[in-house]
Amino acid sequence: MSHPVSPLAPAQSPRLPALAGVRIAARECNVRYKNRTDVMLMEFAPGTTIAGVLTKSLTRSAPVDLCRKNLKGGKARAILVNSGNANAFTGKAGVASVDRCAKALVAALKCKPGEVFLASTGVIGEPLPDDKITANLPALIKDLKADAWAAGAAAIMTTDTFPKLATRQAKIGGVTVTINGFCKGSGMIAPDMATMLAFVATDAAIPAPVLQELLTRGADRSFNAITVDGDTSTSDTLLLAATGQAP
Image (cartoon, rainbow, N blue to C red):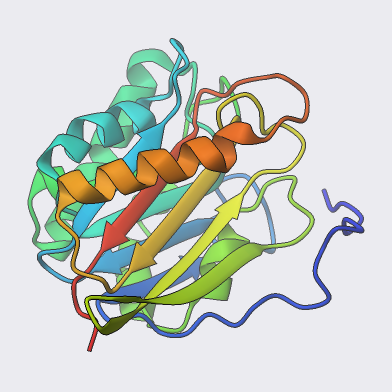
């Protein structure tokens, strides 16, 4: 189902530059939608640190539980996201779907189990057809590109009427670093990032504990300060990765 483009949409989306240590791919996997991309893979160089802010809901989804567990390690090699199905209120079947997707991603990238992160957004209470995702992993990995930020943003949209991207540059210790990110979220974005997914990456070198402190502060002043309808979400996920590969 398509929606009229919001009057708040920018005249054109910003063009995000390639970021050292980050590659992205998106594919049409038919998780729920037809004739559009619905799965996004973001791959990071070895040694990338990660931080996250997740839903406070007591009925959080299985992908959120995986992120919560793996954030303790502070390292990331990949984020895998699907739209169309939230894999929430799916019980043991949902946990099993997350486990299969995570194991397939670990095997494909030859990384550690604690270095992969998953997120899902869409309808609640329906089993996730994870076989459609895992079957497309080889093609997603083959399609990985440094300049596919716009494609990644489009793949995670649900009721959004336009992709939401941003990029900034700053100097840290005399080194120019870049920060890229995209998110999805439309009618339901309160309280605390409700139905919000956001994925941000930088080429700055930042230890995981410091990254977490910075992200928590930033989320409190931005996503957690937005209100639309007062509902929270089972799937809120904000992840920030730092590759440490700034020139």
